[in-house]
Length: 177
Image 1 (spheres, rainbow, N blue to C red):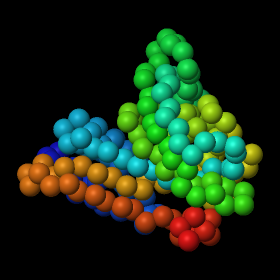
Image 2: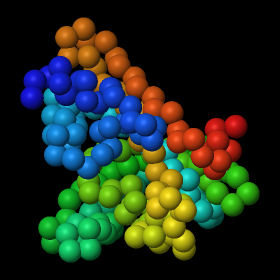
Image 3: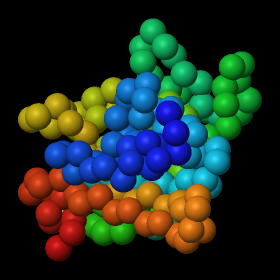
């Protein structure tokens, strides 16, 4: 694939409202890897969390180890065999009666990184049974959204900022109002 194909892939927005770089396919993952290595790709996510007594900001630095049999990752504070460094920062954006809206900025891109690191501090994304939610969402989704993508245009050297609209759903709407 050439650079133009990669740029076309990441600018496409899916019908569900998420940027295509969030889908788990070889082509998209390849595009994401290429962009992150060559174009200083920065990503921000939003998620809806069950309200907990968490701080307004948090910088997470863990070792993440993937369990391929469970298709799950675990965040550890200390060094563990076969674990990779994972860094993220979250900010509390809004508090609702039963939920909080968080903005997450990734500094590394590990398997289920956001889900694992939030779970390790007692936060669980709404609908995310695998990482601690008490029940699933009716449609089986989780309230994690690839919201904002930044990178420098490879030829024009200008900043590109792509914002994906949130899914059309009542809780996401309440978070945006």
